[in-house]
Amino acid sequence: MKREVYAAALTIAPKLHAYFSCHRETALRRGETHLAPVPEREDIEAVIDAAFWASLRREEGFIPRISLACLPQAQAEHPLLLDRPLPIDPAALSRVSPAVEKPGVHLGVWRERDELCVWGATRAIPPLCFVVEVSAPGLLVIKHHSGEQYRKFINVAVLEGDRVKLVEESVSGPESPPLFKSLIAFDAVGSGNHSATAIIQLAVAMRGHGRGGSLLFVPAGTDSWRSSIMQPMHYAVSPPFPAAAAIEAIGGLTAVDGAVVLNNRYEVLGFGAKILRRKGAPAVEQVVLTEPIQGAVASVVHPDQLGGMRHFSAAQFIQDQHDAVAMVASQDGRFTVFEWSDSEHMVHAHRVETLLL
Image 1 (cartoon, rainbow, N blue to C red):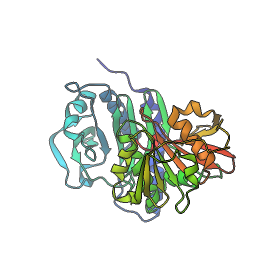
Image 2: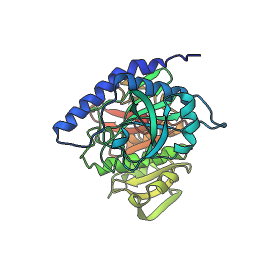
Image 3: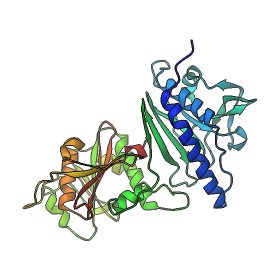
Image 4: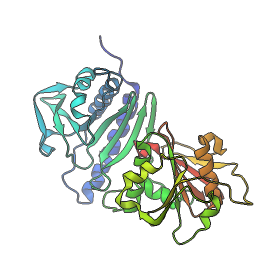
């Protein structure tokens, strides 16, 4: 019986084809080489469609975890080649998924003898290679290799059921504070933005344990932030511990009740910190909420609408400490960056989980 075509695949395929074509032309003009070719629009549609329906299946009770990379086998380094290529079919993808569920392993997809198929598997893929990743049932992430080791992939779109989210490629204007701009800087190839790299790694580690958590960045060389923290801090660290050497471990500290405190030299000052409203300061009553999605409109909301006590406390901390930054991971996977916006004269909350999937 012929299955229904995934409607979002039909909607987004032309936009993705235009995105990858444009970025490839720009990269070629910059003199870059060894770029992945752009799949045809029909092939983009077919791969997304098959990945979506595969994500809804079960293989011996397990949810398929698949990454599909569109490139000819000749462009893959040391690939595993199948003697008989597999059809782009949800059942076939589901059956082979246990073999390629480890991070960094991709099923290679391209046209062989004028038929779209899975030709094998590979770990190494070239820059701008179109990738569809099954993140959860009905949840797909479209991404590509950036060409930089420090930041391997750039998210282009997130498809969640019938919801299509195209990630905004650039951020400008006074309403976008510095940390957020660096976090979603999509002209990443050759940028060498190691600060953004550390922030992204911390954010991924925070989401990874699934328990939710908070992290506060405070200025080095000052203790003014302590007026917004219950004293004594439960788990103060002395001397400060350099976070760069153990980012995964620092992310794990956010699973402890309370917030992790880092200075802007990426040194851990403590964890389990309880946020208090600074003495004499007003309670936070509204924040600007944005999401780096094309067509998204900023809105002014009460902090309660962002989530639970972690979000409210983070918003209060930033209202009291304008030079600080707060990051909050929810148990459901949402991720919010809080910064003070001088132009808006209020806390700015950025929902950024679409960048971290």
